[in-house]
Amino acid sequence: MTRAFSPYFDPEFDSLSERINGPPCRVTFDNESLEDRTIVKIDCVKKQGQLLDVVQVLTEVNLTISKGYISSDAGWFMDVFHVKDENGKKVTDQNIINYIQQAIGSNRAAASNITSQTRKLLDTDLHGEPTAIEMTATDRPGLFSEISAALADLQCNIVEAHAWSHNARLACVAYINDQSSDTRIDGNRLAAIEHHLNTILHASITPENTCPQSSSSQHKDVKSTGLIVAGGSEGTMTTVERRLHQLLLSVQDFDVPPTRPECPPGISLGMDSGGDQEAEKASVMIENCAEKGYSIVTVQCKDRRRLMFDTVCTLADMQYVIPHASVDSHGGYAFQEYFVRKIDGGALSTENEKQHAMKCLEAAVERRVCEGIRLELCANNRVGLLSDITRVLRENGLVVLRADLATKMDKCVDITFYVRDIFGNKVDMEFVKSMKREMGLIDLAVKNEKVVKPNSAPAAKPRFSIGDIFKSQIERLSHSLVTYM
Image 1 (tube, helix red, strand yellow):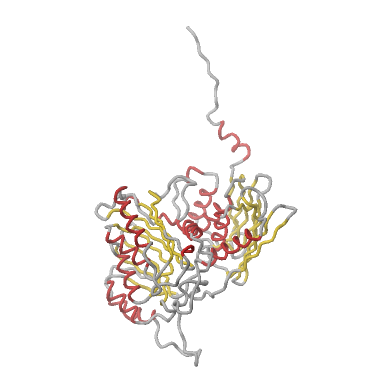
Image 2 (image 1 turned 120 degrees about the vertical axis):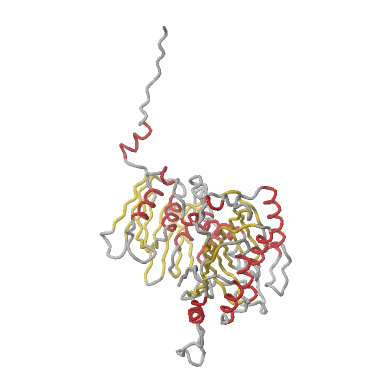
């Protein structure tokens, strides 16, 4: 009898390196060294896009980065971040700590099963498999409302939607499914939906509804990205916010479109400011360090949440790598310094490259800052809900600057709008009355409202407050509503 032999392989051989040298990535939390902040230390094997991955994870759990040091020499990536939670306190929630350690630490299998905060709001068991539709267009008053109405007419249920408007460009990502079955839309219907939406996005733009732009600066497009399911393949799904950055970058929102005096103020140029945020442009400078082969990118602006995420993902989308960086904030002002190279090596060599990068970073900082008031609404989701709400906004002469809609497991939908008057005037109190009258059983709250005071008496009390008007009538609304104040 012939005896066959085969070499023996220890089943734990693949993990031998990790057992000897430790895991490929270590994430530690220090709540003892600083009085009011948590220190997060990350040591990882260097890989392309590592910094963006780390910042994205910290952003997803709403941590504010007040200081950071990044270095990636000799094949090893080392980060130190000073962070606070969304309440401005140290990070003590063990669920958040576990999430961060699993998402960027050694437990990659567990990380692949963790959904980002953006996608948690989707319940795929409840809604089937939603299809993502991405849209970019030259913005005009009422465009977002037209898109919402078109989807309602096509019997599409909007499970989740996010839209940003900046410098007369609109980017929108909407997750839709079939109204009748709450299932994924088939290919034939999807083609018809795309055709219909493209008709809207390519509609004629007249001087009455927007400011004129050269045909070369206009960009309109809609495309289906197919199925995006929470907890998809690791490394293949970006967050919705990063995708909005990419979409606006693709339509060159960093270029301020031309205007003329009769254009309504604020529709087509400049940085939007809102609430307690001042209209202050970011200061971006770029200089080269010839001996090291880096370009040093410096960003200074008013500090806010998600600022580092916005700048890092924009640098990554422009195909720059960041071997070293430092960020700091003090007195409400942020200072960021990135040592970058082009992905194929070398610093930014021409003045055109530097100017382009500077404009893109300025746009990345400005996109989130919105003028006007913030409206938060809650209602039971139904086909046409977003269309009805945006129609009321449009009929009251309001422009939607940003929109976020998310459906929870109980089919209750949360919607946040940043809106302002089309001509830059204060929002009339009749707006609140019409919202309640025309939209029915919807809970509405007003935040970051702008109070306009008479010029002759700056300290005088305003004649009315939208928030006060709403509070005086809220008891009349139907119960089963959720209040966000």
